[in-house]
Amino acid sequence: MKKHILIVPGDGIGQEVTAVGKQVLDRIAEKFNHEFTYDEALIGHVAIEATGDPLPEETLVKMRASDAILFGAVGHPKYDNDPSAKVRPEQGLLKMRKELGLYANLRPIKLFDELLEASSIKADILRGADILFFRELTGDVYFGKRERLEDGNTAYDTMIYHKYEVERIARKAFEAARTRSKKLMSVDKANVLESSRLWREVIQKLAPEYPDVEVEHQFIDAAAMLLIKDPRRFDVVVTGNLFGDILTDEASQIAGSMGMLASASVGDSTGVYEPIHGSAHDITGKGVANPLASVLSAALMLDISFGLKAESEAIIAAVDGVLKDGFRTRDIADTTTDASKILGTDAMGAEL
Ligand code: GGG
Image (cartoon, rainbow, N blue to C red; front, top):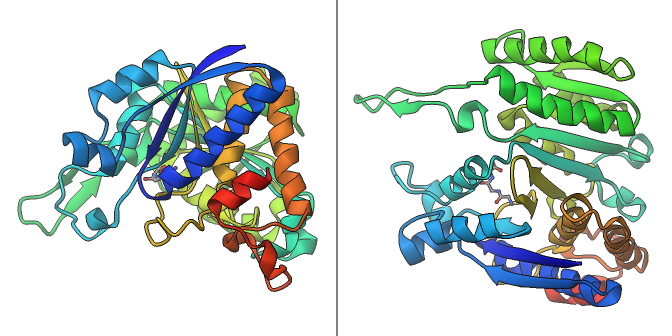
């Protein structure tokens, strides 16, 4: 199979982990006799530095021309302490999602058995947890009107959802639930927010079209609590952009570390595959970042965008293999880890 993949490392550790993700794609191409060609493009802080724009037009053109995108992360600490900055790395990420119509962000919470002890949650309530989040990606406060009033002391963000936006992601989640345990949890804040009442109404109206799927509604606060208390109660979860952003970071602790969680953003055009973690400037350049989320994102790409199931499974098996062999990056190491098996980014990539 011939495919053209755009590599968009972005900022911070995005550069380091995406390099490993690409190496793994190369190994798969060689092993399974595929031809993957690559191009590279800028986004985020590195793009602002080079062009003044967090998502330059040239990057968008390359994105549209590719079969899939392996993405790293965006962000830079200098903007965190400068609330007045008008141009920010994250704007590149949001514009990319909007321009490419990437409305569904799939975040599988896969717990490798070897990492049961690395999790912040007790192993006995965790064993067997397997969750697939659908985070809506093109609506919510991320895209609603926002403003700081002239007095400088008042600000607002608008949480906005349209029926069609809820419907299209809900359909994806219902379809996924059909292939799994036939249970769908929808998370909202319908006791307070009007946009959540619309969200719930749309899900309830769709439910009769999927009579084989049992639907449960949870408020975001209750869902956040249940996720820690009883993670096995969750299977397929559909939620909005903001709640999904927060809830999946929480869920990363089930998998042992943010460094283990891959994601796929899909919708109207080219799919984007990226770790859920950000640019992590505190560890950038130290060579210690966990590359496995990028590697597992490459596996999602092969499965979802190219339909290469065996190749995707080969990557997951390789990750499982290195963990079984005792290798860890420092984020997933614990007191029982053999110090000689705590690897840096590149060394972990080389073991795969
Ligand atoms: N790879 C994910 C990433 O770069 N995250 C940084 C970020 O700004 N995330 C906000 C979001 O995902 O909405």
